[in-house]
View 1 (cartoon, one colour):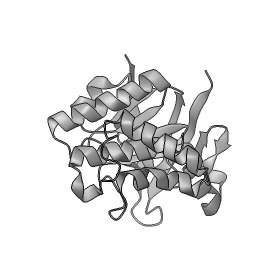
View 2 (cartoon, helix red, strand yellow):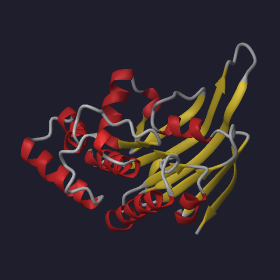
View 3 (cartoon, one colour):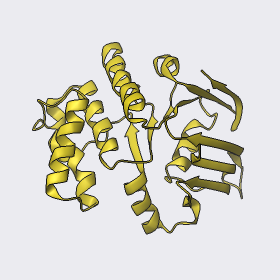
Length: 228
């Protein structure tokens, strides 16, 4: 299968003119559609830096990131914003929901930016929030939802744009055991039933146990690549 993501000689060095910090060192990696992949490693191993470059949130010092046949490090800032909007879903540990908007409005917001028709937005919002078990909380604001429920809204929002893949940075870090299980069940089901591609960065063994592929980073390089 053609990879959704192609990484070649990816390198990130911070403070290159002072005391250089080599966060990522010449990584080569392909990720194909339908993967449920976890990136693990100790603090400082380069996990978050790698994830940020995959999502176009940070630019590499050297090397390339190609997503859906587009070299994203060649894009202007405005082109990159547009590309992320259409191709990448993000789930962060801090949820990042807009507090004044309801669950429905938070999920719909991405589609508004994409100029999707109202009828399509309404149908997809309902379908997504039903799929994450929040069909009865459409009009609840983030402050009226538990942490686990907020994170499920964040997952629905990440899927609203029909992205090429979803990047999840420590998505279970702030969740209790049951909420983490529920969230992982949902993402695993979406991966299985809709062939949605997920790439996680995590310290959480609960995420690692579910992964089909585990990439271990050490000192900015891939120390092991385990398929299950």
